[in-house]
Length: 298
Image 1 (cartoon, rainbow, N blue to C red):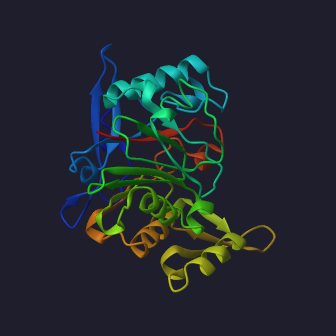
Image 2 (tube, rainbow, N blue to C red):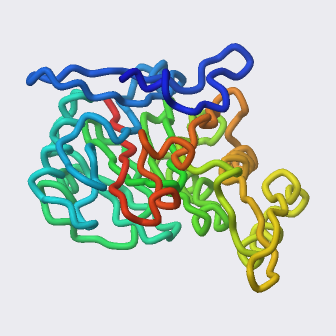
Image 3 (cartoon, rainbow, N blue to C red):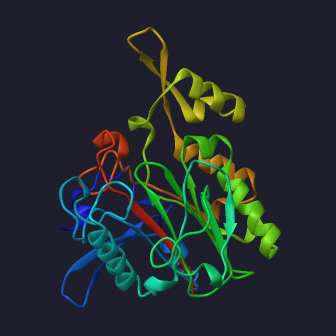
């Protein structure tokens, strides 16, 4: 199935520039794996990257088919095969992938060659890491999603990359800015040089939050409340509910941190709206696998 014939897109271009596209990779066994990519990242010529869909794997049931989580109850061999397929489709080495350990922190790990394979082919020896950065070629950073926001960073001047996980906790604590600061400290990265993308995740229409979460965002984003929050009614106890725009909040964070508008691609694909094609925690009530965001420096 052609993904863009069935996916619910809000937009596919912005000011004449394509935001996100799909590539279909035929594996050696004849299977086809679709990967979502950002043309602006690809055009740097210095990275391989993707965001996966549910399609092209071997998992069954609620994990159907390209689940990339080892910890949600799926068969280990199936998940391992799914990783192998992503690696083959991307043209990267499975043994040089490096995984996060996401717990909604703003912790960023500097990845070196000694980390190759950790979380997939080698035991991971770190925890509580929601962002990975590296300047080592041929290491593939790997993070996992099912509604939260993936953030991609490419510094073409200092040849460094970063990949981060930003749910509502990461967003209210400015994970995107934290990642840029970590890249600046490690590689002298200047935000104005960085090519950045906000990946597929839950849209505002689908993301309802309680008043206490809305209050935290109102405090963290003064002057932007109307851009990122909308009243969404009351709950059974009479408490207020709001819809939260994580895409816009992360855009504000990245622009405030020094990313230039022409270097920023903001997603147009909602995981919850497209839960037949993308894993969504909210749409599935937690019965799901994980999508993957991958980024590798050539």
